[in-house]
Length: 251
Image (cartoon, rainbow, N blue to C red; front, side, top):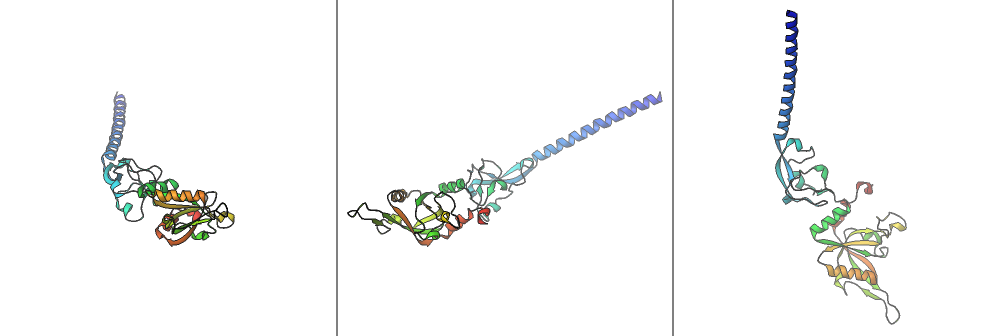
């Protein structure tokens, strides 16, 4: 009889122990879950929608509290790193209002065409491509950062209609044009040697409101030959162009 009572007591204690263990584990997990979802930390979030491939401005971000459980390790806890050094740009994803800013979705280089195009909207600029014989236009001296004057030659049809040469003296719109890029005839980066090293397309940048100059350049390109003569240098534009070149291209 005592043996039976003892066995029942042992079983009861075992069941009670199992129940207590399950209760303790469940309680602990619930406590951890509640802690993770109620413990808050300060992070940098988007105060408004930040478009893809655009620069991050001070008025676009703010500090906010978020549960620690939803904060990624790449999150920024303060705004100082964003604005104390190089400028940061968004990637192809951008950020929605309230999104946590993450370093893995930011870059200090606008090394992509969409990024460069997005920057045009912010600076109110536009690009104009010009075909030119750069071998006769000081060759590799015409590149990003070069300030050039354009000389246009319109071939005459006969002796009674001789060639016409137009420069800044005849058309002030041909003066002080800023070069941001150059490509060969296949729209690729010019090679270092050989015929492929001869650039044929030069990209100029100007104010978006300067449509008169853009129209003139397009017309001259269609009716004559455009030659570019360096007259100055813009260091900021040169550095911006170099920053957009990938590490692989620099090797």
